Image 1 (cartoon, rainbow, N blue to C red):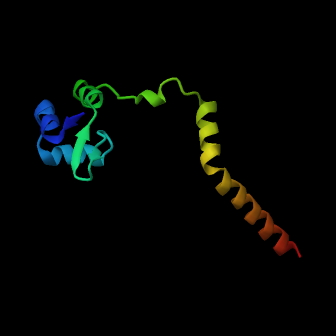
Image 2 (image 1 turned 135 degrees about the vertical axis):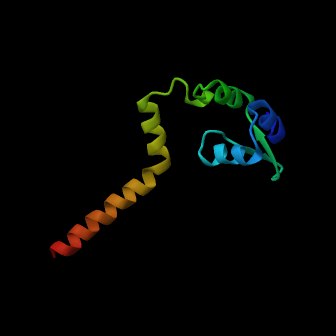
Length: 94
């Protein structure tokens, strides 16, 4: 993990440019202890060379894996929405 100052020096960018990279999603900042920003060394190196950084947990994931994760997280909301929609349809048909 690199500090904000190390990233500024490594990328030769100002603090405001680093903040813009974070806001645009090109660089991920992690907070340690609520106040100290840290950055992954691999992500900063990829940004400097122009490569796209792919987090290790995204490597090798198929669409089926992504769909399974989506269902695990959002199944309650999907089922609830369908039930509400069915209740509305039944209510207006009476």
